[in-house]
Image (cartoon, rainbow, N blue to C red; front, side, top):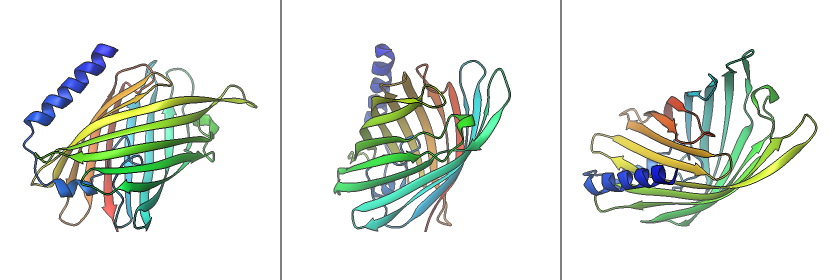
Amino acid sequence: MIRRIMLIIILLGLSVNFSQAQNTNATDEVRLFQNFFQDAPIAANPYGEGFFQYSTFDNDFSSLDLAVQGALPVADKIQLGGGLGFRSISPGVGDSQSGISDLLVSGRYNVLPGPTSISIGALATLPIGSEDIGESTFDFSGFGSLRHPLPSGVVLIGTFGLEFTEVKTSQTSSDRQTGALISGGVIYPTKSGLNVIGELDIRTEGDFIFLSGGLDYALKTGGRIRGGIGLGLDDGAPNFALRAGYFLGF
């Protein structure tokens, strides 16, 4: 596992050194895929995204998510956000199940506006979702995140967080697990409006390592078409994920 992580870090570093990307300022409008809510920039205007994601896991298990998420500024350096979705799961053995997810709420405060932007924030899931799909749990976390632009135009991104997850041990009782989120990646902007986003998320609880690559393309109409794929590098992450969505600022 350690060798895999080191290889990924080396490859990301080489990509940064050889990139010829431009237009750094435009990346403030580019949102991450894995860490949509755990990021440094504060929006000047409300924005939202609708997307679907198909994921596969071990033992022929798969899931399909249809979700919406967004955020709005409430002060000069503060924004609030939220997300809600519908999920259908198909186990290798047994009947398929579907239902709504827990409601995610978030907030973040920009400590340092830039050029190296640093923010802190918190997330929580309100347990309104369906237990049939493994939801209806109260989870919460705190994080710090940054974006640092390089002279080439490439933007380095990073997040560190502490996560407190509710795990149900029976129908009437649950346990709480504590873990850390360590995330890093890059954004490659181009003059054509296309941005390439690479992210690596490591969660110390649950054997979770997930590498994703995505594209964010700014349309002349003001919206953005977004999509990407992800590969799990440890047992707790999806083996494969495919995602596509539409992002719009207001």
